[in-house]
Amino acid sequence: MTSTPEISSDGQLKEACGVVGIVSPGLDASPLCFDALYALQHRGQESAGMAAFTNNHITVVKDNGLVSHVFSDAALRALAGSHVIGHTRYSTSGSANWTAAQPVFRSAAGTDFALGHNGNLTNTLALAAEAGIEYTSMLSDSDLVAELMAREIEEGATVSQALATVLAKAEGAFSMVILEAGAIHAVRDPHGFRPLCLGTLGDADAVGGWMVASESPALDVVGATFVREIHPGEMVTLTSAGVTATQLLEPAEGPTKLCIFEFVYFARPDTYLMGHQVHTARRRMGEQLAAVAPVEADIVMGVPDSGVPAAEGYAKASGTPFGYGLVKNRYIGRTFISPNQSHRAASVKRKLNPLRENIEGQRLIVVDDSIVRGTTTKALVKMLREAGAAEVHLRISSPPFAWPCYFGIDTPTRDDLLAAHHTLEEMNDFIGSDSLAFLPLDLLRRAIGLDQECCDACLTGNYPAPVPVTLSLGARW
Ligand code: SF4
Image (tube, rainbow, N blue to C red; front, side, top):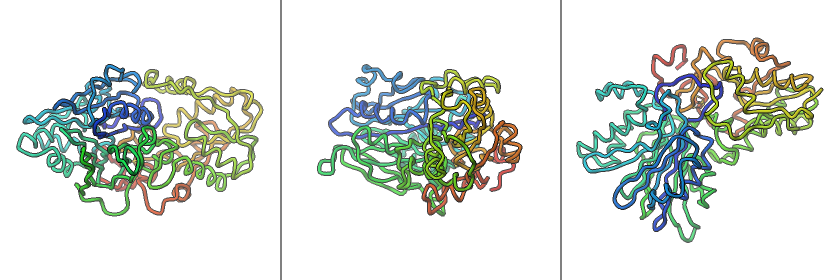
């Protein structure tokens, strides 16, 4: 969920939320949901929440902070019940306060429901205006969906009818979970921008419940078995009696537009997307990079985390030894993110520290997943040189990121994207690397094993769905 797109505060791409829904008849689902959210922590570190249906009402626990901070044993006990949804959040708006945490709760005409959203609607302002709702920065697109659903319910609609009516008008990206009395609905937008998969709890002989989650490792950690991905426009409904599937929204024409950056950067390496394991795809990206952008060097190293498998692939394909050159502080959250350029550069030092003995006097090939503003990459190159690197050759496992994302990823405006206004040579000069090369789009697709298109709008400017006119200046769509 997001409200108006704003500038990423540390120059890195930010995922915008993970969702979970679990029905485990006869068992409390909140401990399972906790583990699943923990596995999706990378998708949002700003706030976390759960909503449980218990004793004929919905209880919501949510707060700012990491999953492990938000849910104490007492909180999990308060969330007793066999039907639970969960959410991890990264906001792309200024409203990073408690009220923006999810799930969003509404009560309308005696019907309670809670909603968790991964994605970003692109026609939020139009939807709000049509409904006569003043849209402020404190209101998220997820709040708006919940409010519009509540109005439908007050007119006599069921939760799923309200969902169908409201989402039929929504544009953009949404993978949502919705909890109501005795049921969880999970729905994916007609393009399938953000991932969402279905699994079973228990073994094949004794299904012990059903589960949906943004990524397959959330199923793995609770012992659930992956069944399939939710289709674009599809809604699955989980109840104690089982699972039903409905084509709630007409799927968009053409292939699924899953975000290609889920493969490059966002998703966990052990996640399967469209049948492809992300780690394998990243390794192959490195192999393709080595073939298309070779350079003589002493060591290949990756920028943790997603650059590491790509570096392994580059090393294997090029015959250059693989090594570790950077140690990542895994406990940096949003706390230290500063809003201006100088602090942004300094934040690299908080996140990464060089292994001097592996770097000193060495000609380095440094593999990273993307360059957004260029400021963090520039700071990284400076840090490696200060650690004694003789040469720094940057290899990026995706094409230049030249267009903003409107589909659930926090990116700077086009003005702030380095690749939008600079040639390869200018980018290399700005960053201070000895050489710079990107993986071309056709080779990225080949590395993933895609026989169909994904969304690649941030690389091509070809937006598969409408984006607001005020936001799409210069977009080729
Ligand atoms: S524009 Fe880029 S980041 Fe956004 S959904 Fe498409 S591929 Fe992903």
